[in-house]
Every structure is written in structure tokens, then in C-alpha cells.
Length: 210
Ligand SMILES: N[C@@H](CCC(=O)N[C@@H](CS)C(=O)NCC(=O)O)C(=O)O
Image (cartoon, rainbow, N blue to C red; front, side, top):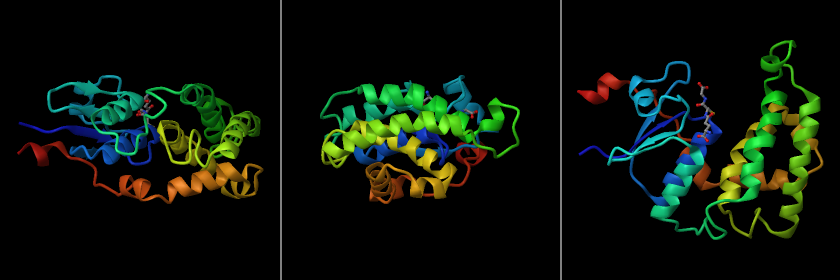
């Protein structure tokens, strides 16, 4: 019988969510690193929409939304009680929709506007900062977003803040939200994050199918 399989891309913040859930819950699986420009047929067969992460369970069931995967892993085993506040959190929905909108337009301005490759859009950076203010306020209450330890909201959101912070490193280091900066730095330096960022060779179907 084949075990669980994860199709993943190392730098994808959605895939990071899935990998963190799998890691903390201790679920064993085969990791298949993919290139987004050359997705394997087996992944597209499992999930034709073509986004990572895609998790194929040993019973053949497919989970192809990062939050569903994170929740499923925790429903199997949640040793750190990340689900203390339940399966969903308004903050996550808000970040996935509106923050992501501004993040993409800030980071990849040339995809959305007629500007040179590599240019950033400061208007969208300013909009995104309104979200950071909410995080800063939450972090004034607790060390993490909902309590003094990470929970679902931290795990689901920080990979996107990491992306945001990397667009203009010097600006990020100097900006006005010290709690958010420290929170991000702590999560990025954590053993959990290091463990899920190990590098994998790109999966080649013929090698594993022999
Ligand atoms: N809603 C999906 C979004 C996943 C997603 O958009 N992943 C990106 C990579 S970060 C992707 O696979 N994009 C497809 C592509 O670039 O071809 C989820 O939460 O899993």
C-alpha cells in the first residue's frame, strides 16, 4: 500500500502551511518537490487546478487547499494545541483575501501594471501596512497572535508576512511595527520552520515508479 504523498514547492507560503501541519502532527508522507513551471502529471491528475500544496492520502483522498491540509493534520494530532481557538479564525480569512491582494501587487507590480520588472508598488505596501497594524495590536496583548504560544493563526499567516518582509529588506528592518518584526523573526528562526525548509531535489516520476 502506498503512503501519503505531498506535492510541494519549497518557497510557496501555502505549501509551508501544509508542511508545518504535517511536521507538528508527526504524519509520515512522501515529499515530492515540484517546479511550478513544470508540474508533474500525477499531481495534476490528483488536482487539476494545479496549485500546491496537494496532499494525496493513502486512501486516495485528495486535499488541495492549504488550510484544509493544515486543519486535517491537526485533526489527526495536535500536540501543541494549535486548534485551541477552533478550526478557523477571521484573521486568516482576512489575510488570505485582502492582504494577499496587496502583497501580490506590491511584490509583483510589473505583473499588474506597466512598470519595469522588479519595481514595487508603494501604494499597495501602504495598504498592506494597515494589516500589520492589526497584528501589532494583537501582539501587544500576547506574545503570539492569540496567546503566548503559536496557534493556527500564527502558522497560517506568518509565511505571507515573511514574503512581504523580503520584498524590501531594509525598509522592513526600519519600519514601525517592532512586535510584528520580532514575531516574524522568532517564527522564521524556529526549529519548526527550519525543519520544513530543508531542501529537496525536484521529484522525477520515473525514478520512484520503478
Ligand atoms: N488556495 C490555495 C492557493 C495555493 C497557491 O496559489 N499556490 C501557488 C504557489 S505559492 C501555486 O501553486 N500557484 C500555481 C502556479 O504558480 O502555477 C491554497 O491555499 O492551497
